[in-house]
Image 1 (tube, rainbow, N blue to C red):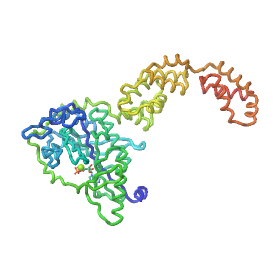
Image 2: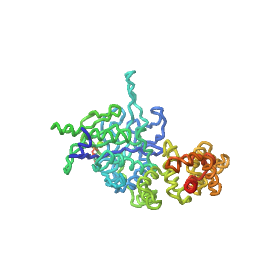
Image 3: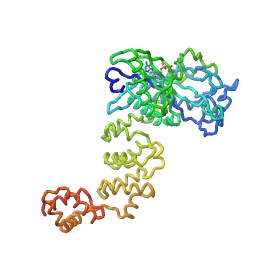
Image 4: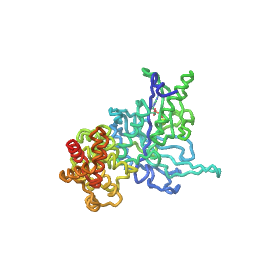
Amino acid sequence: MSLEEFSKSHEIVIGLEVHAQLTTDFKLMSPASNRFGKSPNSSVSSVCTGMPGALPVLNQKAIEMAVKTALALHCKIQSPNVFSRKHYFYPDLPKGYQISQYDLPYAKSGRVEFYLEGQKRSVGLQRIHMEEDAGKNLHFGDQGISLVDLNRSSVPLIEIVSEPELRSADEAGAYLRALRRVLRYLEVCDGNMEEGNFRCDANVSIRKQGETRLGTRVELKNINSFRNLERAIQNEALRQWDLLKQDKLVVQETRSWDANENLSRSMRSKEEAADYRYFPEPDLLPLSLSDDWIENRRKALPELPLDRMERFMKDFERSAYDAEVLTSSKQLADYFEEIALPLKDYSLASNFIQTTVLASLQDVEKGLEDFYPDAPALTELLQELKQGKLSLNMAKEVFEEMKTSRQPASKIISEKGLSQVNDDSILRSCVKTVIQNHPAQLEQFKAGKDKLFGFFMGQCQKELKGKGNPATLKALLEEELKQS
Ligand code: ADP
Ligand code: MG
């Protein structure tokens, strides 16, 4: 049973629900700090612990971040919007309800745009709403106890809900990456799936090709990486297809993805909205946002990743692929731009960054913060390369040295005596000497053993201690061999 076979007659339909944790200093409804370390229950107030009579107070910074995100995603801001209580019982939720938004969320419609295999795609959003997070249960099986940590209680989240418009695991991955990039450019969310501050549930159904009605969906939870998102979706599509082939029905339910076993397990049958007994939160007024306030937030938006990517394609003549890599983080895009503009050789800057620089960065997001060579220092190095004073290999050697010693290129070049020999007369006399010293190889070369060209090049570079300009040397060697 393969996905390839499946795709001949069926298609996957996916809608994603993404929870993004906002990077505010304080929590959404509580004065407790939102920047806490590991020590459990160290960052809680009476609101987080659900003490009777404790009143929630909205954090304006969280609302600003949420609105900025919605505007960047082309949503319509709804004002007034309303907070509601979503009731359920769980030990990590002492109040017995979560404050969320239900029928009147703060943002509606909107879209996420991205490129997939060079093609531009646009996927609609149903809504974005604000809500508080719940705490966390910690289970210590060997001691037979479970403990509750309320540090996460009332942490501000936004839930971004897509239309069921995604059609493959790859597309879902591209959507999620693009969405994360927007959040990171806006500096409203760290976007780290492994750390749980950017979480994604995938709703998956399948249907025959050409069918317009939606099939029964299954909600997959516990997806903690991009790789797992893609694997979980493919696995679920095949599981549903198998059921249909046996004339069984797909049950609407919530399943938990197990990354180790590479399969999902049923958690519960899908709860209905009525089960949560939603009603408007009586302790918070409906939230009114004036048009002026919203417009000012819109004007203050930075250049967004997709706009920047398209600008790089146009102004710096990059392919969609190159432009996407170079704009994968705001820091990297700034770095490229600060180098490419003064260097005036966009391909050189783009290639050197994508191969050499990115290879030495573990984490592109954080990696550039105190990375050396910084933009001016790398520009200086690439100028030497552009002017032919260094070969590419030499430039890479200098780059490695710059990284560890944090010294400018000029200093390393002069200390190591690393400058390329470009002088035609020096190169030509070296070529002549090498040919004269290897008469046997010359005979064989002339008899048709073309491979020996590399041998002559090698001998010349040996004489020149590897510093001969390779292109000039090659041209001169060809010329001299012909005349010998
Ligand atoms: P809930 O909040 O109960 O999970 P929603 O109606 O808000 O339900 O839908 C959540 C997500 O499910 C949305 O992203 C939506 O696009 C997606 N979805 C709805 N129906 C389907 C379906 N038949 N197949 C795939 N995804 C679906
Ligand atoms: Mg859901």
